[in-house]
Length: 88
Image (cartoon, rainbow, N blue to C red; front, side, top):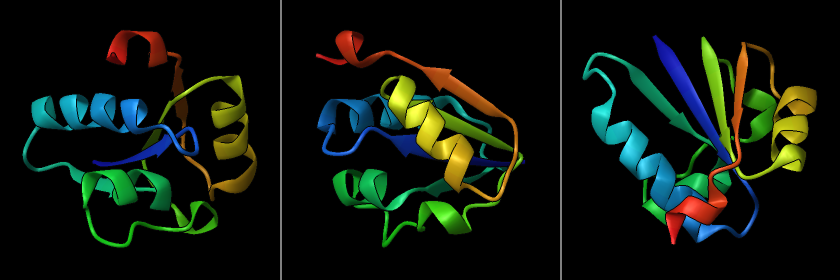
């Protein structure tokens, strides 16, 4: 399973949520970060959104983040979450 994470631009709190999610994923799942998420998590360079191919794309931010992921990624089901307020 390949899961990609896309966060709201400039949102360190969103990246912390992603870190928590990744900690509970099965170890055999491949995790892909967009560049913004990788910048906060130190997970390498990350991928341009337009190059992301995954079985599922998880967005953390708001409606704009989900729309950006749906419009610009290569595809895959998208699960949008608006958890920003919970990450403080």
